[in-house]
Amino acid sequence: GAPVTAQTPILLTSCGQSPGPTMVKVFLGRLGLDHEFLEMARAQDLVAAQQAGKPYRSLIIVTGASLKGMGAAGVAMPDELARTAALIAEAKRQGITIIGSHVEGMSRRAQGAAPGDNSDEQSIDAVMPNAQVMVIRSDGNEDRRFSIISEGKKIPLVLFEKNMEMGTAFGSLFKK
Image (spheres, rainbow, N blue to C red):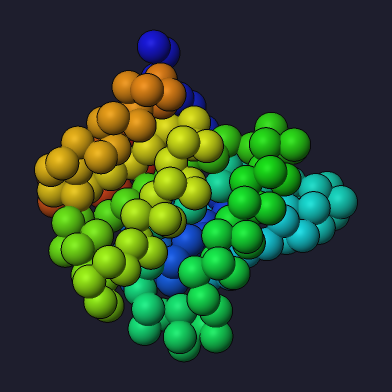
């Protein structure tokens, strides 16, 4: 398919409160892309921007569940999933490009606090099938988790190897 072209301004948020979005923010800044980072972005943030006449054009949701991060934010996984679902629904209503991203590799996905803790996988399931494009660090795709979603849903998959290539991966979506 044709490459996905996304537009600014970008709203960057987390599903799972892992450190991933902070890394993405650094690269968006280096690329000079107009963006705002709200760890707990809500559907209302999209509505407010639209009403102010400055609608967001892209929504980057970085998946990766951190129980420490969620604890610090005072939220549990069901709260994160509900917030994310409402955010995605509003983005779709406004025609905002949804970019799903997982940038911390398998270590984040395997970092369950306890055996059977699958909150990271829940964050992936909440976001990726609803995305128009996925930007994934390739070592997080060792089990083809993201490839399978990509193939099943016909969602373009942009893989990068090392963190320093993250900028190129995101930059490829935002053609100046």
